[in-house]
Structure formats: C-alpha cells, structure tokens
Amino acid sequence: MNKKTSLQSDFEELNRLTEEFESGKVSLEESMPKFRRGLELARRIKKRLEEIENEIKEIKNEFRDLEQESVEQVVIGEEDEVVASKEELF
Image 1 (cartoon, rainbow, N blue to C red):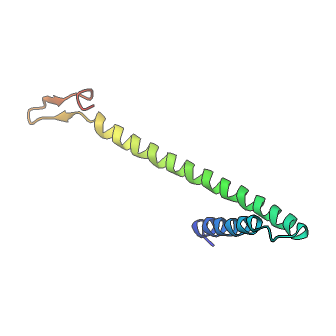
Image 2 (spheres, rainbow, N blue to C red; image 1 turned 180 degrees about the vertical axis):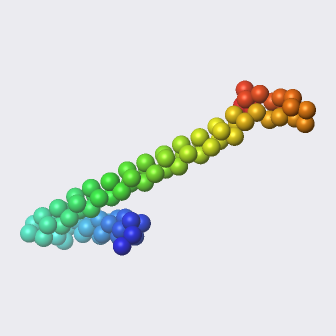
C-alpha cells in the first residue's frame, strides 16, 4: 500500500472510530482497544503529515534556489551592456 493510500485509509479509519465514540454506543470493554487504535492512527497520521510538510519545504527551497540562480544571471544586451541589475529586478 502506498503512502497516499495509507494516509487516506488511516484518516478514514480514525474518522469511523471517532464517529463510534461520539455516538455513545461503544461499551467500556470495546472502547479501550478502539481508543488505543485511534491513538496509533493519530500518531501515524501526524508523522506522515510532518513528512509531507518537510517535502513541501524542500520543494519550495529548490524552487527558491532555482529562482535565485535565474535572477543572479544579469540580463545582458547585444553589446554586453548590463540592461538591469539584480536589485532592479526586485
């Protein structure tokens, strides 16, 4: 099972458990294992969301680095005259 499907199925299972608790139809005997399962799912979801957040930060940094490289290349005219400085581009 890939990570996306796993994350989605974990969310769905946690949602079902939450609905069961909110309904008030879960006995004390049933509630303890379900509560533990809910905590396990919440931990896994949190960990995966942190991983996704880090991936997004890495992508943004890569884009920022690429953008910075492009801006640092000074625009040159036909006769090697500087048309715009780095500061003027901002």
